[in-house]
Image (cartoon, rainbow, N blue to C red; front, side):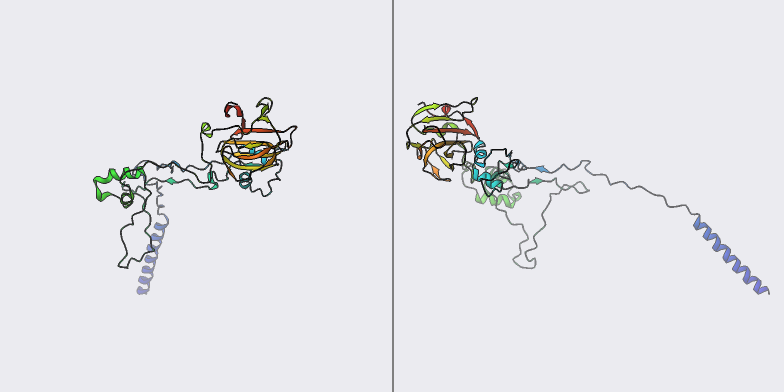
Length: 336
């Protein structure tokens, strides 16, 4: 009996201790919540936004024109100093005789000059680690080579950089420390000539070179009496020169024939010559046309014969247009 009493007392004690421990766990206060803040920057400055390099700005959108009732593609091209074939190509027009009222036409290449849109070239700020050390961004090494090959080169290859005065000047500044010269600069040095030539003029392929107005050397397209003069108020866009049927009409300046036909109402058989990026000349009411579209013509070259197509008498209607706007030919032609 005494043994059983001791066993029950021991079991009761164990149970009491376990209950006390359980109560202690239930009343333990919750762990504190700590709000973590971002680690402060070692530089204290926000990295600048990407910088657009000069010469790589986004290409602006070309101007547009909304087609009105009575417009033709030929007239729109003439009024804006354009080649109607280029205007059709920019707007994906297959039939140049069909345009719709309200249609919006691009008056330039969809992607700017040359019709090619390029994304702007940007530079980013150097990466700044937490230690404050500025490290330039380094491109990942190429994995095309075989590191285990005995001919594998661990040094970067020298890039071939086009020669320029700026690059050559930079090389001269670094000549005091040959070991610090980058591989690119060494490549420039090997390609640089003994003397620096003058920079060649920049040219753009596919564009008519710009020519100064005075250097076009305009001449009279025909001989005869002027029967109508230029007038902005009377909407007279050129001059009328009377003459004989079949009389030769010559190009007033050198250029390229961008139109030859009868597509413009009121002009009869018409020729349009583009002289540069600013100037066109128009020759209307011809009896015969002696040139073709796309043909290069010299100043004084015969391009047509005088006639009276779509006119009340035999005459040449002659216009000079600057950026599509009619200007007084008398200001450009030599004294009669």
